[in-house]
Image: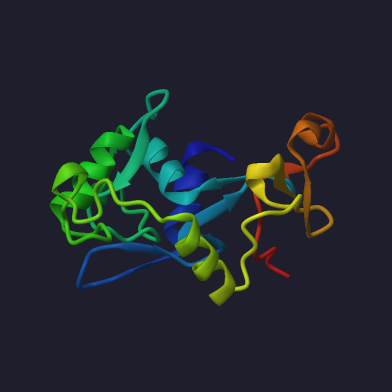
Length: 177
């Protein structure tokens, strides 16, 4: 596809919200963010594609952040590039972090940790096991394969072997089936 065809594709597959001016992505979503499939194995976030097409290239290592705080939005006027620190500072300035806008030493949770006893109580209440060979802290991880719509947990040291066969790191909750 040419650059103009891609721009047209983005516009045609989004709905403009008259109140906010957001261009809400109508197709595939992953964790709330719009996804544009490249092929059966990979996809790209729609807001990143929109920024690169309408504004310009995304510098290496930078994020594309939303001024509107709407992860579905692909309106280039609502997007800006920044570091992870910039994105977190934006979140805190808008009061969207979990502890009411306070971060670091200002947070009421600063320096507090669960004891072994409290971890066991939380785990028992939620059927979470603190010990076990299948927990991530014991050297396992999730991989997924969109070609066969499957997630699998494997030993972490075997990731490179599985990646050769089209498996990706992470866990995919919805394969769009």
